[in-house]
Amino acid sequence: MFIGHAMVAFAIAAAVAARYGCSRERALALGIAAGAFATVPDVDMSYAVFGLLKTSVTGVFDATEAFWATSTLVHRVVTHSLLVGAIAAGGVFLWSRADAGEWWAYPVAGVVFAGLIAAAFAETGLLGAAVMLAFVVAALAVTIAMRRWKALSPRALFATALVGFLSHPFGDLFTGSAPRLFYPLDVTVLAGRITLYPDPTMHLIGAFLIELATIWLALSVYLSLDGRSLDSYLNRRATLGGGYAAAAVLLPAPTLDTSYHFVFSVLALGAVGVRPRRPTNWALTEARVLDAVVTGLAAITLAVLGYSVAYLAI
Image (cartoon, rainbow, N blue to C red; front, side, top):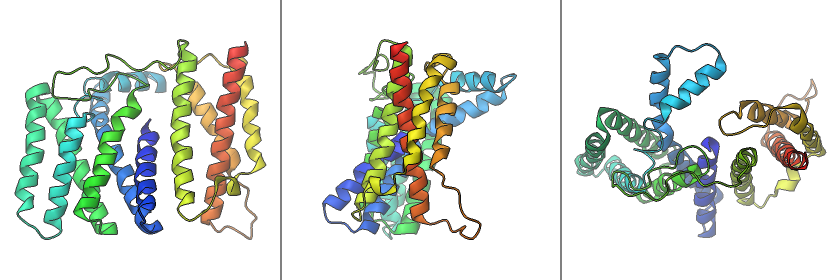
């Protein structure tokens, strides 16, 4: 759900902003801010990079397995908490108020963020504190960037940070380990991930379709901000994705543990969305990009659906 986190937050913030009368530019800015904040909790994956450097691996698949194994030490623990997200959004609000000229808010924001780091240290030691520090730095980077780029107000940044931080954990309920929603409190909401289907291959496909649905949602909201529709950019080339159904016979059945051959091959079908250009017309316009994205995404969606039908029929 790496992409899905940002897509969901973007769609929620932009749609709500448009619903309450914001201009297209304003709604887009709020959506982009929420989407950026939604990616911040996954900064906890940075530890896996350092852990991977200490691991002796040979080959891409060994490296990938080692990366995910290392990431489980802190992933979806420190930064995926609803409590941490709400408090961090408050820190974002205070920091942006200070950035707007109310200098007293800087030390208060510092206390809020230092409290998060101290709580992480008390609960999970130095590693947890380091991950929380990375989370705080990333959150402040998004805050400062959005203040400089679109001059979003402290209240707008608070709202978009809430949307981003609080929506993120729910996208992780279907893959991997369940996030600790109320860290650092010892409260267990879900002991494991939600199983969409008993068959592990169909569970993977279900999670993949949820990710695709978030992208479709974000695209739909983006286009609706100025009255456009998805079918305006859909090309018949997308039907080529249906041929991927044959992969159900040709490739080993994928699962969450061994999904690379399925994911990489089905994503490659998105290339059908790229329309060959004439030598005299190399301009990269928004319409050309949208045509490629919508058509490519449709091809991938048809490929996954076709694979599902073929897999169940075998």
